Length: 288
Image (tube, rainbow, N blue to C red):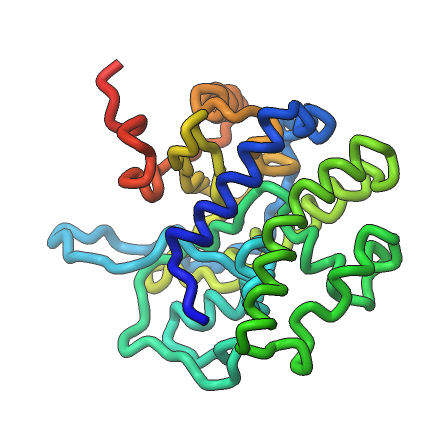
């Protein structure tokens, strides 16, 4: 059974829009996205001595990458960590979910893991039975989701994952609203995954050779289900927001930009890059 990306995208956007139409998302809003945390680690001594590049040679990289921390990627079998993603970018082989090796022909010059801020790391934490979060009743249906014995590719397996895909978001939001799932515990998972993604970027940064960025994807949409996604990329990794700004803070991209301006006043520089603007139903191309 082969499913197009368009169909899967439609399921995703429809589910998310339903949550916003119902107002359930308001229970997940948090003010801590403006809290600045010191994520600094020891940087290579050579960083200050990198020569300029007057020849302006072209550099190649990728600023849209998902790992196991994105709920949609994890549901469809992605188990790679941010560390795996950076290893792949520098030319090392990593395993595809079906077991074969994947490797680039040439290493990249820059890279950013941009997992979805919305429920960042939550599904993976629910599925991993070694975590405290997995002990909650909410997590039980997702236990061992990507264990080898559950990685089938038959029609039934695909349909089962689609059902998980369409039910995860509304179930999580409704349980937070009812109090069955503690909002702060969910935010703790999000913040832990965010910190891990930042650490992975720092550990693989090689001054003058391989540039990494702390980043994530903001996933908003229009009333007619147009895609308004942005990849938010930070200039540095020393001081960053405690958690990324997601559609649970606001579905309006202008609020994302205001958040970025507020961070800029605190010395945190960032850039928002439109993603899949062709799927915005023209909204990303409006003149006013």
